[in-house]
Image (tube, rainbow, N blue to C red):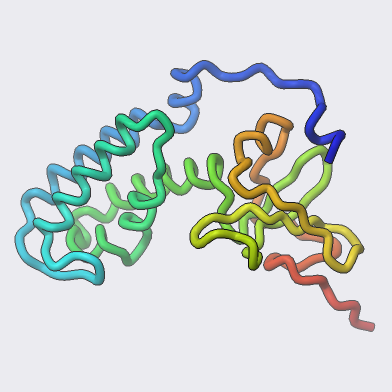
Length: 192
């Protein structure tokens, strides 16, 4: 842990470079397109909203929060635009491509600014996966199960994603194959 925290610091991106890297401006433009398209729908129903009008009002508030908050939380937009969720229920095939773009961008933001359960990570040559632990708050993850031969090699990084990335931590290819653990963080069993 000590070595991870005190490694050489990397050059930080400016705010504009950061937004460009994560396609923030494109995301905001697409969210406004989605709001305009959704304003044309009437009625309907999905699991969280009684009508397209109710979803439209909530989407306007969600866009405002993402666009103007100092540290935006993409969770609500991410949930609404996930495949087969609220956006798909109201926009259907007409909004399919737009919804997918929004989801992919918010998913990229979340995975690079939040710990998401099941995400594979690496820091200083060590690999691991984010798991849900009893200590985690609802919808907040940060316990990393490291890929080691130890029976239970976990580390609590809850609410420290920024620190994790500053010391060189990153999201890795999700097809990475672990040596000692399964993708869900459980220990692999040795079969003869």
